[in-house]
Structures are given as C-alpha cells and as structure tokens.
Image 1: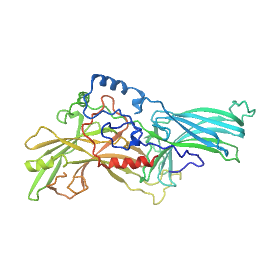
Image 2: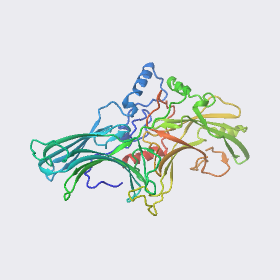
Image 3: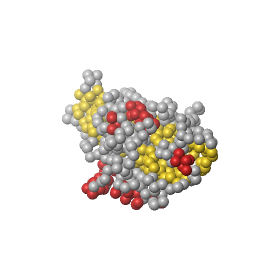
Image 4: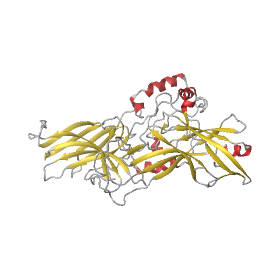
Length: 487
C-alpha cells in the first residue's frame, strides 16, 4: 500500500472489512468486533416464518437500506483534521458512511455517493489558489507498480472563479475566517485498465471491492483526498482517509420450487423434483478397495443449486448421490463425513505491467496463483433409502466477511466448488471413508465448478440455513486475521 504524502491520517479510526451487513444469529463465525458491523437480518435456522414475517421480508427487500445491505440506522460521522502548530484544527474533512462506528474507516456501497463537507478555518490570511477533493482507487502489486483504475475529482473553491469572501477577508485569494464546502462524488460502476503497451483495454471491469490481506501480494484501496493548492513556491496541504468500497453483486432469483421451499420452510426439492433449480456435474466414476480385500466401483454425482451465484453470509445448497452394487461400500461412501466438497478461493495475478511506469514490464514481478480451501460442505443423509443408491443433502456455509468475486486487469479473485475424494488423515479433496481406499492416490481434486460470491440477496424469499457451520473451517480463521489487519 502506497501512502499519500503528506496526507494526515487520523491514527484512531479503524476499518471493519466486512462490508456486507449480514450475520448468523445462532452460530457466529466471525469475531465479535466484526459482528458489530453486521445486521441480524439473516434467516434463522429452521424457524417457521409467519405471514407477518413474509410481508415484512417482502417490504424490507425493496427498501434502499436492504438493497445495499445496510440498516435503517443513522449514518456514522467521521472527522479528520489538519492542525496548526498550536494544536487547533484549521482544515477538517467530515464524512458520513455506513460504518458501524466512528472508530472505523468509512464504508460505502456501489451506487452511494462519496459525500461530506470540507471546513477551512484560518485566523491569519493564507494565500490559496484552490481547494479540491478527489476519490482515488488504486491496485498495488509492489512498491513501484501502482495502478490507478478510477479517479474522480471536484473543485470546491477556485480563486480565479470564486466570488465568495469572508467577513474578515477583502481578497478572495487570501482567505481568512471560516469556510465550509459540501461535496458529493459519484463513482462509476465500471472502469478500464491499461495493457502492457500503455493503451486502455476494450474490456470494462466492475469496480472491485476493497481488498487487503496480510499475506496477499495485491491490494485494492480507495481513498478520498482534500488538497489545498497554494502558490508555486509553497507546499500544498493534503488531508485524506482510506475508505471501504463494496460492489453490489446480486444473484438472480432461484427456481420457483426453491422459493416456495424457502417460504414454507420445507426441505429443498432435489434435482429430480426441480431440474431447473440445479446444475448436475458430470458423474464421477470412483474405483477403490474396501478393507483392502475387494475392489468396488461407484458413481458419485454432485449437484449445485442454480444460479451459481451465492450471497456471502448464506449457504451453497448441494446434493450428492452415491451409487454402487456393494452394500458395505455404499454405506461407507454415503456416510456424512465421507464426501468432501470444498469452496476454493484463487487469487491470480499476472506480471506487474499495469502501473504508473507507463505499461513497462517490471522484471521479477510475475506472481503465482494462490489457492486456498475456505470451507467444507456439511452433509445430512436423505431419509429415503434405495437398495443401491444413497442421497446426501449438504450446505457450504459462506462467511459473512468473505470477499466477493472480482476481477481487474490481470488480477482475479475467483472461487470454485471442488469435490474431492479424501482419505482419513489426508488433507486432499477425494470419499473420506475410513475403510475405503480410492485408486489414484491422495489429495486429488476430481471436479471444480466456478461460482460467484455476491454481496446482497436475490429478490424474493431469503435462503433458510438448516445446518450449523463447521467451526474448523479455514474461512473462520482467515477472516479473523483479515479483520485485525484492517483496523
């Protein structure tokens, strides 16, 4: 992260990087400080909704606060100052945002204006040419490679055009007294980046969300900066702060059958009863041995709920079917802890060619792809049992602080649902059956399916979570360190 010098940052404000306002009511998976930024408006586990709750849910879904994932509470006010040698503030930046408190950095959602006021108080005459405010979005991949993908500025006061004067000032270029200027800057929804040749790509990208993690080699940061421009031989004064930005990624509405299940709090219909609501992956042919005495063949099919876009703070519904003619192998492979389906996150970055160096390639800055397993599906067996077939219903819990899917130039933050057959004591992804030994070795990813992580709910009834989250998942541990890094 490249600091803006000589911007004066208030050392006390901290940011809660959980920009979406969601949380679990019974099974918290994020730190208590992060939960303070969330609203308890997620559906509870397996509670029967009343007609009044249905009407309230439909009404609140159309409100601006719900569309942005925020509550109806009053906006939080943030104050930043530049002080004189005597300690009195002479330049003040005041902003209002969706942050849970003034000790956090400001938080804004897509479509919201970055607004506030700038106050100037001078006891003595100060020769000022102009005062401006700008919002900057930058992606940093090294100290020397900084990409400015969005920059919007607004002039608050200009000595050459302004006719406003204070009661204590007769010269508009020498300001003395107290002045206040409001500002409101709207960020675009999309942006463009430069290629290695220095030209803009024809492809446009959705403005990415703020992204900074302790071990990540790429950081995406937004800042608002106020600049007091002085004469040629005098130093300008700058005041600013970093703020969090969250894009609005909304899934399409699920199938009618699944919406009815959510409204009536009934089990979700499977792929056979609701073929339009599921994407069935290619069947997997699994071969292995049971108790190292006999070989068995099985067919496993994974289905993910459509559309393949899921709101963070909710779950990914999934169904696994296991088919084999060996009764003992069928019981082993269909045990709830046997199939391993995980959510994998990939952070991919290319060469450092997007920065302010004019598109020139910087040697030695080609980054590898990083893949991290975040969370694992929780399974429950179907009550219906067939002679040679078993069905498991599962949910992959998505942390409320999970970073949404984003892409900017050669930077990509993507997620995949991966099914793996895993042996006991192994860390890979094939069935995790105690007496089943699959062929092909351990740590084998059998299938992957790209999914999109959204930030707001789809229109219609909200998903109902039927299972508690797994507390040993990497998503819970990773989010804790991430929250600490942004305060």
